[in-house]
Length: 202
Image 1 (tube, one colour):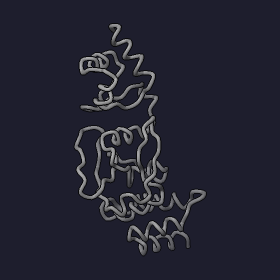
Image 2 (spheres, rainbow, N blue to C red):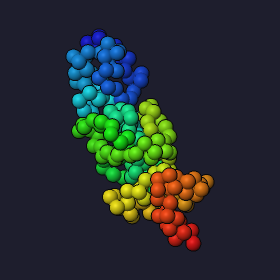
Image 3 (tube, rainbow, N blue to C red):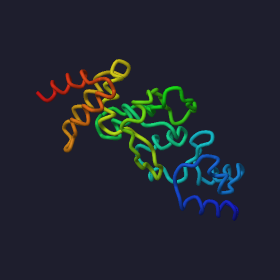
Image 4 (cartoon, one colour):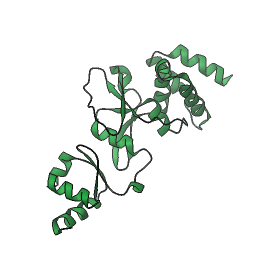
């Protein structure tokens, strides 16, 4: 490893995480440097234009969420992926489920595998919160919005995971049924939510 690559390696390992090509260029790291850093094991290429710095064991089980968000900054982690993050399901989808606003362009790439869901202007922003995964600030829906979305998409994704999530949510200390109902009204599934709540809380 030459002195330049050693210096760049030291520079990068001070701040492990995800990097786009443009971010590396801002640090005056050329394409040739990147290839040498990959050979040296300092950088891992996740896909074209997206790189990871740091050993695999330093990243969370939800690292793919941060990787997806890096490629889709306007996206929001949703549905079964959000259920998994909130510990409301035993099912973890192979794809990262991402909400995008209606009419928005969304990129196609190989890694991580992403499944897009289009949301209207009303439901897209509702319940959006920000979390930190491996040093990356990413958007995800809160628990109540996630439950509502899973019920909204039940015919497309299946009812079993949605009900598992609702049951797990109701067992959690501090659950907010009124917030859940308020979201259900805005998502136009008020009657559906009420029916399942009545059955589970009876």
